[in-house]
Structure formats: structure tokens, C-alpha cells
Image (tube, rainbow, N blue to C red):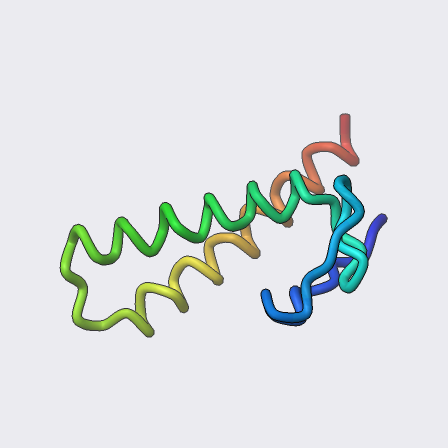
Length: 77
């Protein structure tokens, strides 16, 4: 299982065309994560949520549960 390395900031990001040389993540992975985060942020803005902290906490909890469910499903298959 791979270990996630968070971004160290766009000002520190350097790449070789396929991966970031700072965090080591694949550029496709970085782009997909940015798209997912942008989609969630856009949803919150479209809905004009005033309690963005509660929204992000909910998303984090649900994401953790979803990852656990998918792992269990894959392991038992």
C-alpha cells in the first residue's frame, strides 16, 4: 500500500513531466485530486453554505468511511 505525501505548496512544486519532484506524486494524481477538491468547493459555494467547517468535516468523515468500505470490499473479493 502506498503512502500519501501531501503537497508542500505550489511555490515548491517542481516536476519532470510525469511526477512532482518535491512530493513524488504522479501529476495525474495531483490533477485528479485538485479537480475533486474544486468540485467540492464549487458545490459549497453554489449552495452558499455559511458553515463551511461543518461541510468539510462531514466530507472528511464520509470519505474515510468510503475508503474503509472500498478496502474491505476489495480484500474480501
